Length: 297
Image (cartoon, rainbow, N blue to C red; front, side, top):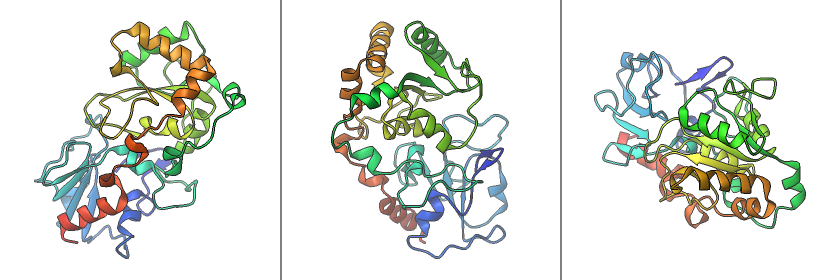
């Protein structure tokens, strides 16, 4: 799977383990498993002869990795990925595994990456009104990034000419320290801002990560760029770059939503999901039944 430093994938505390536990008593066996779940970081999966389920949340090949990124059915029996659903693959974008479907207590102790940082209700319920005092408590815009990709660099510099954009990553850091920690640390930072630059690292239809859902759960507008699946998401609560024909209008809307309470409030209160509900095919029991049927579990 994945991980860095203290933030490693935890085999016993993760979406897949909790999902399968709905139907099965799970025993982790690294020598003779019945089912192997693997991602695109390394080739260790080739050492096993058993049923194999491939998962990827990546749209690009990890640096230095010789492994597959796209589902290769010589390597696995079925896959979960952001590619379209077909006979062997279930469309399953990365953001799904960040949601606390299983009502686990948080924060989960390390090592654990990712953790369930988003409660389902925080993405669906916008009852009541958010007062201006909360808006005033929040700062205009936050930027958390380490990758010098041209589009987000351009936006950071252009936007910084008009409003304060606090950068917590290695890229253009201006807060005096690096935010290099857990997903909970990221949430506790984002909730202090009205908007956040939330660009995907690359654009492919359906490649939607936690960047589209995390800000919304903290009443922060995602300034989003990527291949948004509009069958799932509404852009009314986002500032979605692909909806704009010009940089000028895009920049103007960001500034207004970051400084004007009414503009911000109107957007942050709109539903993120179409019909204000999760798609049935991304909810746990649907995914579990698909896996069981496909792998004859």
